[in-house]
Amino acid sequence: MQLPIADPTMLRRHTTGLLRRHQGALGLVLALHALAAVAGLAGPWLLGRIVDAVAQGTDGSFVDRAALGLVGAVLAQTVLIRYAQRASRMLGETVFADLREDFITTVTRLPLSVVERAGTGDLVGRTTNDIDRAQHSVRFGVPQILVTSATTVLTLVAAFAVDWRVAGAILVGVPLLVATTRWYLRRAAPAYLRESASYATLNGSITESVEGARTIDALGLGARRRARVDADLREAFAAEERTLALRTVLFPGVDFSFVLPIVGVVAWGAYLISVGASTVGAVTTLAVYALQLARPVGELIYWLDEIQVGATSIARIIGVGSVEPDRHASGAEPDGEHVVATGLRYAYREGHDVLHGIGLDLRQGERLAVVGPSGAGKSTLGRMLAGVHPPAGGTVTVGGVPLVDLPLEDLRGHVALVTQEHHVFVGTVAENLRLAKASASDEELARALGAVDAQEWVAALADGLATEVGSGGAALTPAQAQQIALARLVLLDPHTLVLDEATSLLDPRAARHLERSLSAVLEGRTVVAIAHRLHTAHDADRVAVVDGGRITEIGPHAELVAAEGEYAALWHSWQRD
Image (cartoon, rainbow, N blue to C red; front, side):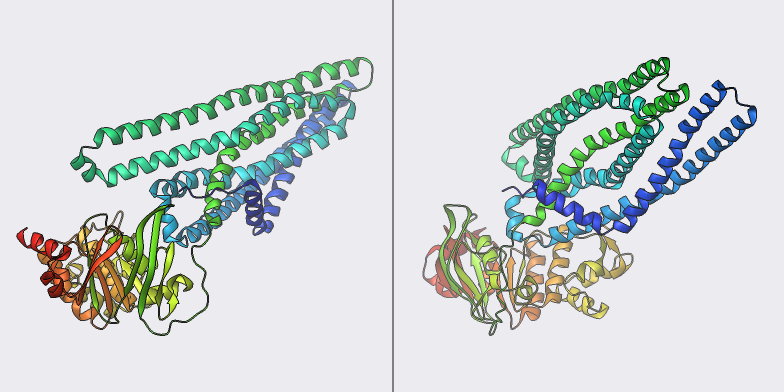
């Protein structure tokens, strides 16, 4: 599954809304750059006046005054450009900060089911490559396009005001410029979309290969993974080659279109001078204007190219916001904490169910262990019971209300899931813990750490709870990261817990000790423990055996062992190991 990409209408609407939030700052930027452009136009106009005056035999005082005015115009332009560029940078930074904050807010609200189906590569590509490309366009491109457009218009107005007959020659390069630019723009958007998608795929392949390095090595899949990365690299190279080919047509065409106006003004102006229809000063002024136009128009074309890259990335960023929620709160309030699953079905791919009509009534306060072979559907069942994935069929209710009818904030107060995959966020240990309960005091944090046997090693860190962890901070072992996650669960304080091999990263003795420590904390709560270590099942009130997406046995440990069925075989095999 690929996350959506914003269509042109959605992109324009979002970008316009973003700029409207900062219309005051945008107006200031345009005003300062317009004044700077006007100051820049004064120089060629004064130069033309000097040429005509000298041709008519003026005295030195006029030239001195004109030269002084020229110096003043240059100084004014310098000061105005300085403040205009400062305002442009501030506007770009502010707009990009808003875009980035909107994106982070959107990403953190994405349905977990969508995130898991989309995979790592696409989302990572949007949060890295696309953000990097977008920030360049937003910070510099948008202000520059507005400024160069205003400068171009003002220069053309000034040119026609000086002498409209000569000024017409400035437009001689427009047909070539328009034709080249239109040819490029028609082809650029799909080419850059392909380029962004190829890098997202490449990122995903590399990330998955790094994260699964041990599995790849154990199964001898190295050659296959290298072949896949090589194929992704070839596609990325081909996509880059295509965009480069487009630019090799755009830039020569644009450069030639800049030369034509200068030649046209000089040639046509010389003719008009010869017939007495214009002056040398006017032609000089307009020749300089034609030369000056090359810079803003060149920057405009350059940024149109960059904006194609940026717009493609922004479309991918904004597109995340069009993901439909996988649940809608009905406003119903659960009557109690009784969790019941009825007729559960689920499919990661349409038509290929991995759960087949599972029914399960969790008794309040019981410990239920879910066991079974790999790929049987245990983790999928756990996600259904925790409300992570909406079921394809059937329902999971708490207090008579379907889990998918509850807002996520309320849902996590009833049912929470802890898996074997944990992430340590950049920040202090305390900040990592307070993700579950922002108002928790240091004493509450200490109690939560004590409940998961983590208080001792946290106290031994350089600054205790204030120690920086995550990327660039103190390194935590996988087992310690798992304990931090379990401590967050203690702080979250839900009534029903789903533990999906939540102690798998600890060695068996430490895992056993931690589970005993957690027992006091979990007292009175409903716990569903999905585990491959059967001592968890031995201590549970009931055991459910899942095989082929169905519950094949359920009951107390002793009864299932005595029944000599699938669970008994698993138990005896585990004891021998």
